[in-house]
Length: 89
Image (cartoon, rainbow, N blue to C red; front, side, top):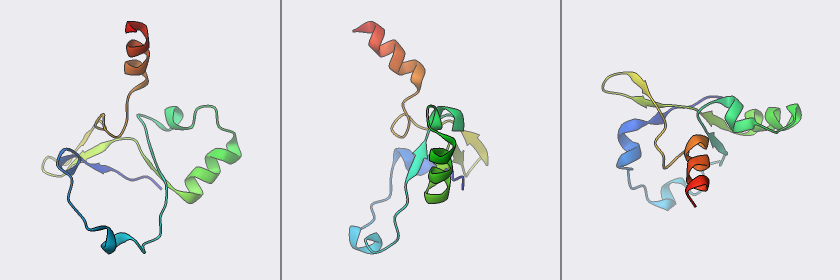
């Protein structure tokens, strides 16, 4: 299942008391710029398991303009930036 990050709340998250959500079922969410980047190196069975057990998020969504947005860096650090940071060290 695919989900979208709410762009407005990513920069200013809502404070939700832990007790409200503690007993809800938990599922993993995989963030990245594409499904390929998220699941690179996994076997077919590993990828299937991720989809069966969790959610995939590859972009944000701006509710006011109804337009897709890239994920904020806090949720996903692009591979191109990681390579650049390694080279600068």
